[in-house]
Length: 114
Image 1: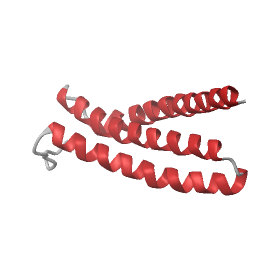
Image 2 (image 1 turned 180 degrees about the horizontal axis):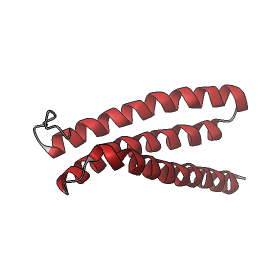
Image 3 (image 1 turned 135 degrees about the vertical axis):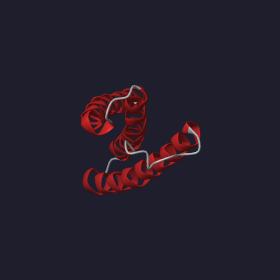
């Protein structure tokens, strides 16, 4: 991207395409992890928490992996130098809170149904 070889028609169009790819990766990886979790723990709720967390985390990862290099390039910084670290930090932080938040909501649902 920094060499100028990568050009997209519009920022919005490329963002939508990347978002769709991130959601599809999240759906398929989340379904696989949810299936393994269901076979292992025999709990639909735990499987749903894993699925939702993986779906949202994949979406955040792809979104930050697209936006951060573009943002760095617009402020005339080399995206190759720091975008990997920033994307990893954002993905880890959001992934942690997405998983714990989803588990918290799931536990509240169990408590209300008892």
